[in-house]
Structure formats: C-alpha cells, structure tokens
Length: 180
Image (tube, rainbow, N blue to C red; front, side, top):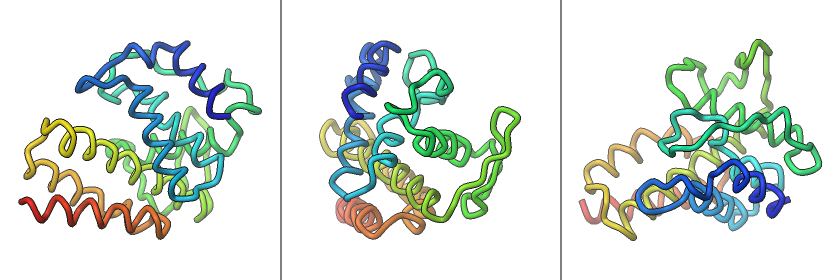
C-alpha cells in the first residue's frame, strides 16, 4: 500500500510543497518509516504516511486531500479513521480529550477504540520525533529551548503510545535535555 499512497501524495503536489528544505512527502515517508521500525500494523503505517493530508494548517503549502475519494484497498477504512482522528485530536481548537476517543467530524460521530488511540499516539510521536530529527539534529533550525517546549507539550502522546514509540520519545527527549 505504501507506493500507491505515495502516488496519491505526489498527484496532490505533496512532493512540491517544502518546509525547512524538505518536501511534505519526505516528512510523511519518514513518519511511516518510524512506525514501520516500531512494528506498527499496516493501517497505522498508512495513516502515518497520510497523517496531515486533511490538515490545512500543516505548515506545508499544498492542497488538502479528500479521503472519501481514496480507494479503500489503498487507504483502508481504519486508516482513514486514524487520519481523521489524528487531525481532530491533534488540533487544540478541536477541544476533544484524546482519551475519550469520540469526536465529530464532517457531521459524523466517530468513536475510536483504545487500540486506535494508541495508533494515533504512535503517529503523533513519530511525527514529533521526525520533526526534531530534521529541524534540530540534522539542520540546527530550531533552538534547543524551543525543541524542549515542543517535546514537553507532546508528553501526553508518548504516555498513550505503544512501548517502542514511548521508548523512542523518551530517548529523543533525553538527548535534547543533555544538550540544554
């Protein structure tokens, strides 16, 4: 499913939208790779690969995509639900407590299982670790103090994440603390 999803992203211009000298596809592919390394299921990895495609505030200058038009053999129903859940739970203006696992999107009520919440938390952790890796470790774009604030504000995601994701988050946080 990875290659067909990347094709969807490229058709949507995600390979031409850049932030900090990296394409949106580059960030999304890296998020997928973290999830793959942690042994996440295929639907979680696909949701990670597509996690910001419906977010108009992603920071990248590209159009958002319509999940309803995507073939479910490429982007399965659960992956779509995880993408929507990630978006709704990630944006603070949505006002939904992560642990509740219920929210409204596009006039529909959506409920998530504890497994789905853990998958969304894994995606959030992979997203943050990738941003820290790219912006702080590789390119020294972000000051250490800003990275610490970013990671500290993400601890709720790490607490809900699977063991491998939580461990990777703690390792990243420790690495940043050591240089602060």
